[in-house]
Length: 276
Ligand SMILES: [Zn+2]
Image (cartoon, rainbow, N blue to C red; front, side, top):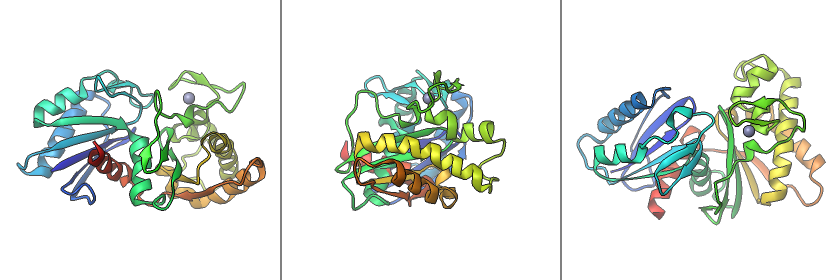
């Protein structure tokens, strides 16, 4: 049995698969702030799912910068208590198998590229808007190479923007339109907001980030994932209009909503294990 774990800022998902293509069982719970508590909950979920079967390999998607060699999370603006903890050691001892780490958005982008909205495309820009804002570049069904991963949410788009404590930068995209920023900036929760003016403003800020990302990554398709994808009917139209109006150097790629929902990272995790 293979296990994929997707650790988000608000929820953790633990899933099993036999063939690395389909999900056998999945469990969801909210992310505990305390690291040891989280490990306990993850261990329990795995035990419940596998029912005494042997675990062959585990992949964990984490919202931050990963050190593959040390098996640790180096920086994670939305999961600070997990930084530098011996995550792979703990789980590999418990289940006597190898444990791999990857960035959560890399895995979700990979999931959409293999099984979802990006199936037919070679060059994919995946942008996930949830608690934070992240993304990845997928090339020929693989996570593109990089020195430290991709962080489109931390591109600076406001010159004299506000300080964002989670990354310690000023005026980055995440500080303006992530789940965390939404309530701060618009004084309403995104799941309650129906105000067209707010969503247009949101779309224009996201559009600014997307235009930058598109000119640098030159994708065939942009896929929007994360919790905000559920609300894409409120911002996708003004977003496309903004990109079309402001990106003139080449033809803008298509922009779509992902179609794997919150299981994109799990599917991507299983595919990742297949290639390792
Ligand atoms: Zn930032």
